[in-house]
Image 1: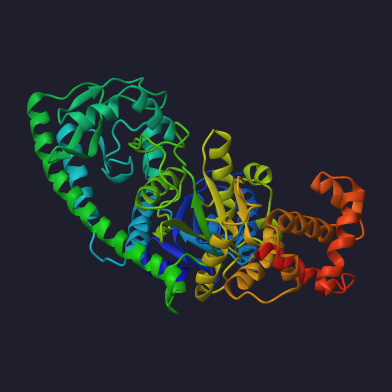
Image 2: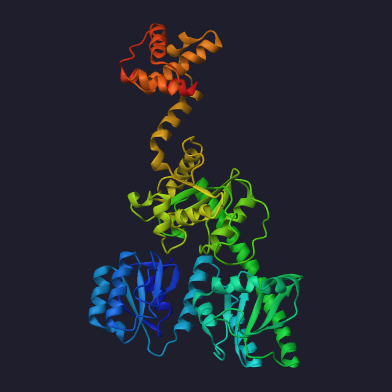
Length: 535
């Protein structure tokens, strides 16, 4: 998370603070229309489509309701007094973008700043890759993008020759649009790049928004690392292709270095996530996304659906086990495809856990799965978002299920939330459900904890009087349990056991004197119920 004031200071000359409100950001979201339902806590909104006072005011009102900390609007509109007053009153920082500044350049710089803040690594290969993209564009006289194997845009040329809708969407979103990925995968484009280093020409019409492209796979050691896409109308000359192939080798070195840095950084980060679940330190809340949080047990397999949102191919052919490293990888890949850029997913004691944020009111956090699916939130990594995604996966035939502990208002309570998630997942009443939260099962949890205590340290009880013939003892215990579950209603107790009501009365007339306790005392009845369950 970066304070909004620090971000503005780092980009001085391009942006200026108009209305300052304390807040931090960790993501960039582009808003093309005031009616879009996007943004949430931690999102910096770039109001590219907010070109009138009315649209900007409407957007600020809606963004404030979703907890957005800051919005950028092009000057001079951003300096309108009404706009600044509305932003201050609603608790949203208003930032002005210089009339001569480029939105695309601003997006690139913001992404770079946020990426480096997230990893804590000041080094970056971004500048080198952008230079290579510009060099490739100069060779082929066309717009160029460099992408990794997950279809994320790593760099793009400043040259805009041959720009089409797909290029604009790719650069703004820093990822190839899912619809384009789906069409290209269906045509075997990605399969071709995974098996061959030969560049090829892709005619226009592969997708409705994608013009013609000359594509160079980026490979190293037989592994596909990414690709270079050149927006051209015809295949380039052989000498140009030769120069581009040489350049692809240079790109491969950068991608290898980037992957090493990324893998190392992620491993360190995941170790911190795991430690936060086992023994969180005071600093855990500083590097996690802003809380409160929930710890969620991830169960089953999210891979049953054939495709959930685009991205790299799924190489897993069989459903994973409930716990273990294989499930961590599968869940991480699935959640990334659903939009969570850096899933906080780790395995502990053969179970898979995720830390999600939960800033909603408790009542709204306990929506039914159907409601969660209908009210899909826009921000990945939240409890409400995860419920909606798992509901959709389950509707598509998947076996994914999630069980959450209660909210942890401070990082020190993450261990408690994890223990609650595991405890709730083990309840008989939760078996077979898709989504569950500890607070919705508080009564079974209370009983479960009491029973576990009795199992660990048994206490002598009147039930010892029922010991004897195993068959008779089991019958007496079942009868007493049903009678206690339905106090004052022998008929319901008889229905529960599938016997005649007179049988219940007869048995209880025999059992009650053996116990030598007052069965009209509610405390004694509760104690007997717990003892029976413990036995």
